[in-house]
Image (tube, rainbow over all chains, first blue to last red; front, side):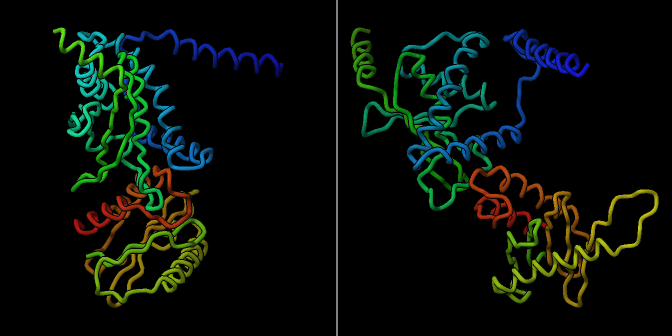
Length: 204
Length: 138
């Protein structure tokens, strides 16, 4: 009697998860997640990672890794869901794609600015004045160089890699007036990407 | 006109203490800790000696205001046992909604902060800044 009840419970749970997998990818009914729920989850992710690393660089690397896994899936999903997009392969259109489509799909707003570094030709910057997932995080003074935007950097890194422009992506907190959470995501494209860009520019 | 805000955790320890005007005497950190512990004690006493409520109502919530000649102390206790205390002048009659907003700020900027350990003193610039804005608006 007990065993059969337990079995009934099991099939109910698996029926629910089957339904989740069979829902259409096109436009799910529950599109948004509450920021509070995600903030709790993200805070626990950071705490969990902090227990398993030995320094700020490692912590950022771990968050970057997690972001990469999210980025790969987000990229596939966006290619499927969004109309009027095709996969970019050049540097500048990829950055525009990230700035508009990706940010809008994840955070319901566009990234605030896109910039090109003046000193190094292969560095670009995406700025977000107030990333919503970082809204409740205050970094203590002992860890002043830590930027929790490393998660976002990982997402961006996976997407640029999917667009065939691999880059090293890091995130930096640059608090400005009235925007204590302003985050800059720095992309440093690899050598072969820059060479390819130069070749494609000249042959055009 | 709010003079000071205190936050006491579930075991009676002071986790936040901020003065917003110079009218009240400034407490040293030791005095503030003693104040928190004492208040926690008398709050618990008041909750327990209140007369039995008819009809199966919930337990008494404890002290809500303390009046003195020059100022009034308001207290708001959350269901989790955290007490939010504000010292104001005598013009403010009830500060329950403002203290509820402070509770909301605490939930956002302390509980969702990965670098905050529960029941420890709150050290968050954003919490300080937003609380200051809230106090000045009241």
